[in-house]
Image (tube, rainbow, N blue to C red; front, side, top):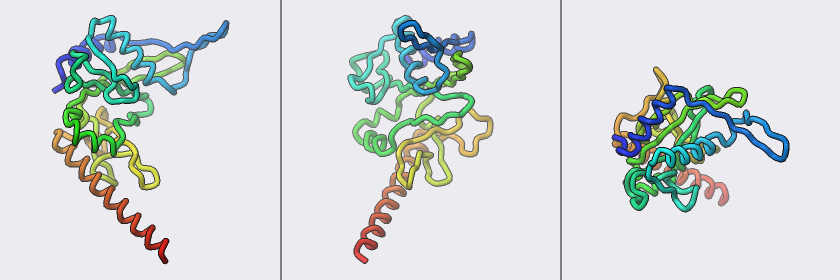
Length: 217
């Protein structure tokens, strides 16, 4: 279940989305002003808007001193960094969810020292940008296991480049019949996370062994 603070936020935002949540992004320098129609940076703009929205709606929150740190916001009690953790994610509805949920290795390590991280809420905005008009088509409030799934290669869907795992990638939880469905429980997600880590570290170790053998031959 989401935290009470996140749930209240979501319920109010959902009403606004259903009533039509539309905006635009403009850039002005000297006398030149134009509407932005590039999707680069959209997530950051939405997050900045949300922060002002929280102030306007009297929602108590704080942010980490480092903007790159987890989470994006602490809700309800700005002095409590253990509960009501909120992450903001955004994606283009025409392209599908392809955002990074978290760095894979960092997430695995952080659960050992900060197990409460797994209960964080994820507020996700699905948008469409068309000729400068930004339309929020849908929003979701999810736990991490509800937006993650398995993949053909690993028990957990990840971003892999040249056999190196970088980030945890999302499932198509919003699709009617996705190839890989989201995990049903926290335990399913944790099992997939550590099975993936085990498989990955074994492959890394084996590949290093092959590399060393080749160097010696």
